[in-house]
Amino acid sequence: MLEVKLLLTFPVGIEDVVREEIREKIDSCIIEESPLDTPGKLIIQLPESKRDVVSSLRSVDSIMDYLGSFKVDKDKSALDKICQEILNIDFPEDFRNASSFRVTCDRRGKHDYTSMDVEKAVGQVLVDKYRLKVKLEGFEANVFIEIVEDACFVGLLREEYLRGRYFVFHHPAAIKPSIAYAMIKLADVKPGMTILDPMCGGGTILIEAALTLSDVKLYGFDISEYFLEGGVLNSEAMSLSDRIIFKKVDCRNLSKIVDFKVDRIITNPPYGTKPIFKINPRPLYLKCLIEMSKVLAKDGKIVIITIKPDCVKNALDKAGLKIEHERTVKHNDTNPEIIILTKNG
Ligand SMILES: C[S@@+](CC[C@H](N)C(=O)[O-])C[C@H]1O[C@@H](n2cnc3c(N)ncnc32)[C@H](O)[C@@H]1O
Image (cartoon, rainbow, N blue to C red; front, side):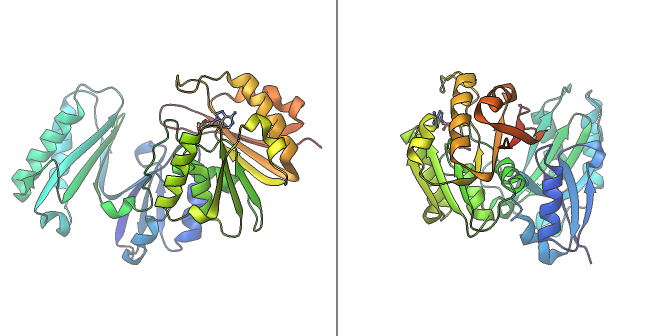
């Protein structure tokens, strides 16, 4: 029997990777993709015994117990509609027995009401119906209302779904772990391979690689000692420090430092848009891709994510590389491209 319904959120553009990971890890489940025509979401129905497996999915950004979804208008009438729908939802026993709760609303799109209006209105409906105490800190249950344009999703957030997502050092330009996981899957890594992120920052790509792959050698380089220390801290927090070799290297000198062939280079170079990284991406990408190509094994692949795909394409001829695959993904408010490169001939 399929007793549990969960709402999963993931970056738009990696649907195939999410589908494949669910197929690999959960055999018996029903999937509803893009509920209410909302990309980047799916509802999964599965047996209670598989609930824990879902929190191990690396391709998803968030998980919540699914309670309902419906369309809402952009004007204030939506508040009445949301309250009516909430009244019709049968909240589960553990919510009804909770000592306290809060409502959290996350809203994307233009609406004539605020997230706080939704939180207040829904909170009052639940207090009246279930006689529970509202607590904004230290609450036991967290009702989550997510409004994406005209689609409204209602669920319960649980702490156990956040397991394995704890990073102690936050790099200012960190990539989402879900996208890092997708890049690793797209890299088609085989046992025994050597993987390098030559601009590893806080180490997200390598940590996801260590969590996903066994029997691989992992190297993380960065020009900044400070970010490398962050990478070490993050890998220690995930008990993975013995799996990754971190080293201070300027990627523009890669071939002078690396005396072995690398099978997969998976990396997220700076885009030159943050004042903290004062770089001009075009010459940096050119120099780095030439160097990466020199250390890449004959059948090697480079998987790169950037909002500056033109800077990658500009470097291809000089670096002796060609494009094998490219796709756009959604990363917060940006739409970077993941580009897979192989040696040209
Ligand atoms: C976008 S960040 C990588 C963030 C990382 N993916 C994460 O999730 O934490 C780019 C990194 O490239 C590094 N970098 C910039 N120029 C470099 C160079 N010439 N050689 C090596 N690393 C460089 C920066 O220090 C920065 O940490």
